[in-house]
Length: 214
Image (cartoon, rainbow, N blue to C red; front, side, top):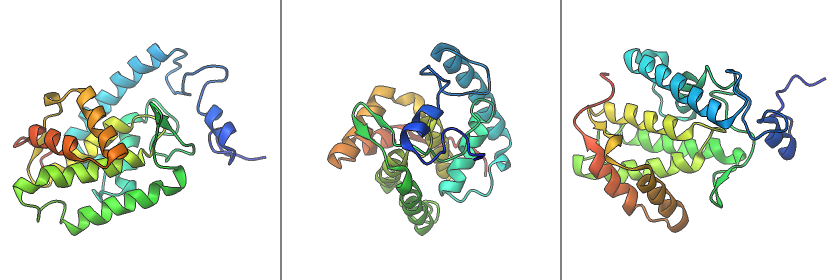
């Protein structure tokens, strides 16, 4: 008898259904939530606590390798109290508003490209200050397309880039942008290969206040 969880059976339809509480649209969770409202509230509160914990103790996620392993460690830290699969790469394809993200079998390849680019740039150290918005936009687009997890990709990705910019003693003030602007910019990047929206956004939110003191 297989010991695999119900979202990792090798059958796409069974895996898709296996992420949910049976007969519902609520993801399986550790907090006993049976409605989307309950799950959202618990997820927000618990992930915020784990984020503050990470900000205070960055070594909870180490090493900072800026690859899929690193991104997965951030996801596990943020969502460990909510999802049994926290930190695990999704086993199903997902889409939003008709736009598909990276197929599961190609997630590692996409994130390897990100890791190679970051390493080649010395964790952004060799990038001139004026060139940072476009470089970060390019990398962010790749990580967003990879969308490695069943849920929680946005918060995990933002923290990944908060850590990356902190290597340059810089920060990202996400409060300077609206979620709709971020969505439109990400959509244009994926659908039209147009990074201008993301580049403008990062030029706007880039500041001198890093989230971490490395």
